[in-house]
Image (tube, rainbow, N blue to C red; front, side, top):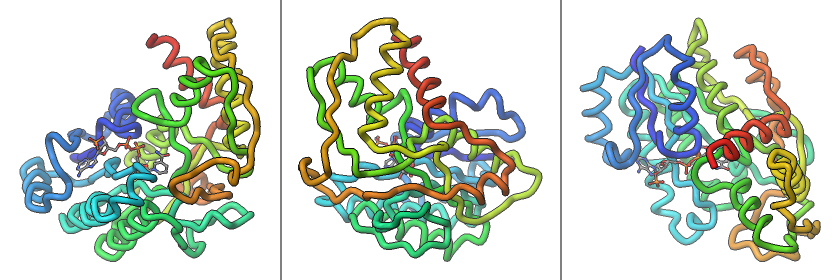
Length: 289
Ligand SMILES: NC(=O)c1ccc[n+]([C@@H]2O[C@H](COP(=O)([O-])OP(=O)(O)OC[C@H]3O[C@@H](n4cnc5c(N)ncnc54)[C@H](OP(=O)(O)O)[C@@H]3O)[C@@H](O)[C@H]2O)c1
């Protein structure tokens, strides 16, 4: 099959490219906004036809959660209108969505058919993208994920390493619970779906194993980074605080844990614990320094 990967310069797209040498069953074309703006439906159709694409993996999105609150229309153009443009090509699609489509007020891991109730502009636009895709494309696979990080682009791990080295103290919330997800692990799950013997459409939840708070995550990031470097470069003391003590532009979910039974059973994959994957990511970052 000919596979088009969009958003190839983002966190997940970069991991898709990095792992491509290990996945040779299909032929891949990688694009980002400078080659193909997904909000241009004509251009999308032209490229998909010209390159005889069979499957689209959509890693592109408007991912700035705070920015979406003030630019909801701009977010909708990428997170919903562009997804509809992809769906209208009539090709098979693997699309990525988010825990933000849920309210974040639950206390049991969210299952795929739990009721969506987005509380933010980002979550609303991502849910709209899912809805339009699922209505138009019977061959859609949707992976919902959360707390994504990688050595590339902007993410929580990189921010914490930066402040951990600069500051004496960091105050981090301990009452928001989720599962950190290394983008490389999500890319492997996407490849498992692409390389499977049959196409298994549906909605799936994917994060790394285990749960923690942002506070626990931060302590572990700094601990592992210091151990890898054999130094105390990341010297900041991490103080746990409640969400009310931090000024957020956008409401943040208190509970983002996703139930992964379906993805594990369907694609027969094993998912690493988040602490192991954090270590793999930090090793890459340290060796690139
Ligand atoms: N990051 C998280 O914590 C998180 C959590 C849950 C789910 N997700 C979902 O996971 C997926 C991958 O996220 P990510 O963190 O890898 O995203 P990312 O790093 O922000 O990458 C997204 C890519 O899409 C590109 N893009 C934006 N608008 C576009 C357009 N109109 N046409 C074509 N490309 C466009 C971006 O280009 P520019 O950089 O130039 O805008 C960027 O290269 C997304 O669907 C996201 O919603 C992310």
